[in-house]
Image 1 (cartoon, rainbow, N blue to C red):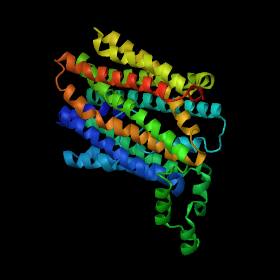
Image 2: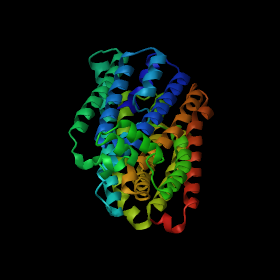
Image 3: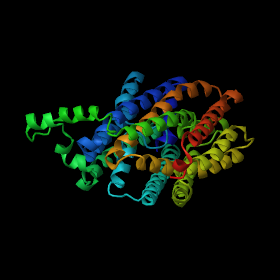
Image 4: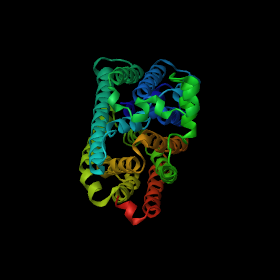
Length: 412
């Protein structure tokens, strides 16, 4: 929902592109902090508990952005809350949810299939959110003559309501989603704590053990693999920060003067196509391996990304955008499968959280630069640079990823 509304909503409230870019950076920095704290303690303190905390923070951020106009308060809300300027899920949810889904699954092909369906449902939900937000804004402002700012504000309020809904849903989850260490807290406590605390479940003891466990990664092999992946993923994420869905919306709005309803339909179509591709990629992962799948699908999508701003007409730019989305997200289930199968089952929340956290670090670097580049749509070269820089960094990531792992690992 926010990918269509957020940038234009903040623009209508009087913030310029540089301030919006800076705000997005603080939001993503806040996501880094929240994700680090919540995901690396999830397996120890209970996945359901952490998901509930995260959804409450999402509710808080939505309320703040809907009703607060002061920039510094929005920055504060962006740091401590969870709000998504990327068009996708941020915060601790995705890595913990994925760990819950495959808690009792060992077969890699099944894991890839589960992640494929998980991403498919996520993209369909994003598509419906984009379509409904564009429709709501158009309907409220044109048919019911609601002030444009208030129409956009209704989308932010809906985001907060969804945060409250997620809280209720997470509270209904069963204990079967918990890993063995979190369902039996005594297993994760140091011996000294067991003797001194008897059977008392101490939060400080959990945190002590978490720190000793190197952010939830207990094995040195897991730490080495995750460290290598983090170094690669941050490059991809920096590139992705130049071309977030909210940036697409603003760029098409300024370049071709599209309405919110049209933009919502385009983003819906893009996410619908991405969802279908997430299902189609599952057998490819099983046949040629996760890394090979990531590279083969990612390279052509990034070439298409670079071409978008050089399309002469609105129609051609939309066609190239949708072609790009038809393959750009195929690497996501493959990446998630590779991360999950590279560590032990009780390290999956931490591994997913750390790699997603690093991606948030990368994403947080770019928005301020994008804000500067998009200040004047009358300068076509500057206006095209986010696509060129983003696509170039993503191509560099693809090449480094391919050569960073041995042949046996690429086909895993």
